[in-house]
Amino acid sequence: MSATDRNLSAAHAEVKAEITRTDTKTALLLAFVGAILAGAWTIARDVPLTAPAIVTGGAGLALLVGAAGLLLRSVRPNLGGQHGFPLWATLTAHEIGAAVASDLAADIAGLSRIAVAKFTCLRRAVDLTMTGGALLIAAALLTAGGAA
Image (tube, rainbow, N blue to C red; front, side):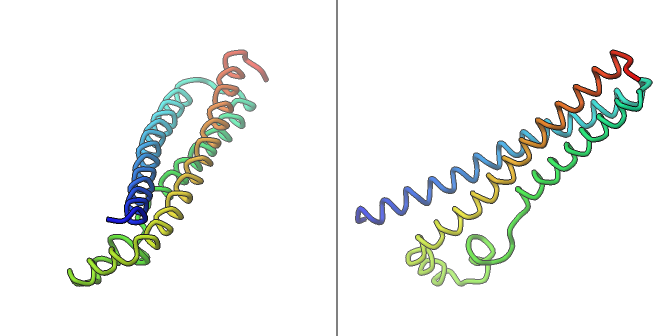
């Protein structure tokens, strides 16, 4: 195996590991957002809320729902067939070997684009989650303080 082949294999493994890492972070954040939504809904049902708390909390919940949507989009399977499993499902065993041997650089590029898209969605979801959480905290303070 040449140095170029080893470098391509290492780059391929690195990109795949980054996708896995991003998917793991996404799953954890999705569970966290779901727990926050469930907890906020449970509390909001049982506590008398002021109008400012309703508006602020509603905006926070909307941002959290948006974050959940971004997270789900991030882990949505890509069945376009350009590379990976969908492409391999259309090839014979011999064609798969040839495609992997000759197109490792193209696969790295395709997987890198997927990784960047996933990372971008995750980053936006984290931003929305932080903003939504801050609004929920503000709504809780408005409720606790009795602001009218």
